[in-house]
Length: 229
Image (cartoon, rainbow, N blue to C red; front, side):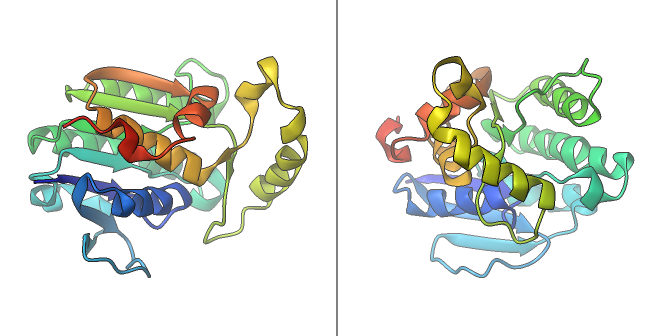
């Protein structure tokens, strides 16, 4: 019998890529998603449930039987509307999901963080990401995997001018970013998705943080190549 995964944030850039990677993987028999709106894609292995994250605990039974939870929740302060709302999406909801995961016997929690995440940072965004890493690591799950990508590349559902401009610049600079500069290379969303699924399939216990340059390497191959039964 194959594995069962659950994805939070499946309508976003990274979450959508993770869902597709999981659906392609022969290791997973079922891919559950909790979303605010239905996904356009359909697949025999895909099970969708519409949810308001404020009522996340009411869907606790949906985590039952799941081995791997992929948390791809994230927003910007501009889109959220305030720092408080940003913290809710990028820290509070992931923490609540991790706690439900532990209660339901989930083995691994894989979460998208960010390069520069640091709970002591003076930059609000980086500080919240660092705080999220700390609290997720303290929940008590068997495996916690935190991914710190640089600027993410891909087609988003909504236009973000700052990220679009940054992506244009980073794409142009990519051939020059070698040696020490390679750790700052922009990250295609599908590369991050492959890295996350590959790590999930290893079943490694403990808390692990993956910096941008390591994610690039992990995401080069196919996820099933590292599957451990």
